[in-house]
Length: 443
Image 1 (cartoon, rainbow, N blue to C red):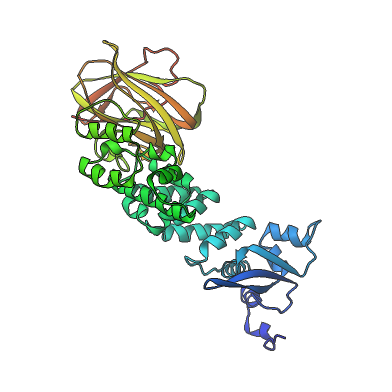
Image 2: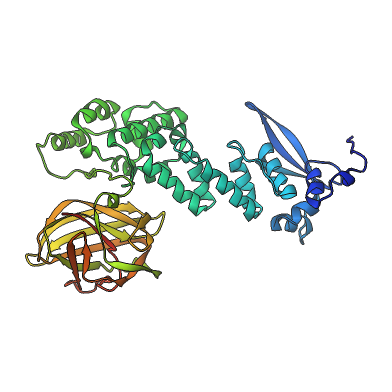
């Protein structure tokens, strides 16, 4: 039995005030939702009375549910995928255009807003998460942001991870992430962290995963939990020898042959390649460190497919001796691309640098525009003036943006870059448009 104050309408002069009064109120209620309510580690069933008309004018899903051809006729509806606090806040917004979001309910409210197609509430949840995003919670937010395809929130999460990597991977949430997300993190070039600290976090994740599966956390089991893709993405050759000896060896993750090979590299006994990447992660943007040569003035509205097997090539020369430190590529934000790159002296046909790697796109800036792309760092390559060099790249992955409105020659920090059509036939890129928007260099 419930009681209602007499003449309650007269003290609530606006529609908003009167509908807000009906929230969680049995007055005129024609449907009830059964949800679980948590009490510490226990839970109970809770009823929330509601009104079909109010819910239906705010959600096309509820409209179909209550007034469609297959309308729900039951007086109570069970919601096994919702929790009391989140559903009540969801309804609060439906009744009043207001919501009280918190760290404990925002993910549940976002889920319901997506499920019942209430875009204005989705926006409020995303804004709340953006305002409260920090290294300590980024790995709790990112999976939901990706699941619900909140692109702006996903991009901001990766920006936090890239810029504050050490704090992020030492958070409690990192130890709970899915293996697939762990692999994405470990493969990123743009992390700002010493490799030994990243290894410690990965090793701890593997230990916790063993505990979750009630397995003994020895080296071989942990390696199995991680998988070869993750283990072989860790850049052991970039570590200090002391760190490798005192931390990595004690983890028992590596095989004897791998250990022998890495120690030889760290001791400068051998320069032969290993199965592990040997270039340091360069942080968020190496373009913030070096001079930029921006050769394309605009970004095109078109995207290029990267599954046609064609290469991107361009030749160039400079009028002063420089050191080339990196190249920028167009990509697609949040996506990864595999690149096989070669820099050649076109006169001698000698390859000055060859590399293959996978790179994740972020927002980058040219002089006149921003674009989705990635930076490929190069150990300083000395280029001689008045010598023609060729850039040859084979890109695999999702379609990528392209640049246009070429500038040639380009004067940058006292150096004149002149670009030429590549001697290699079949290149998509040329002087006028295509890839390689920026060359990173120093004098």
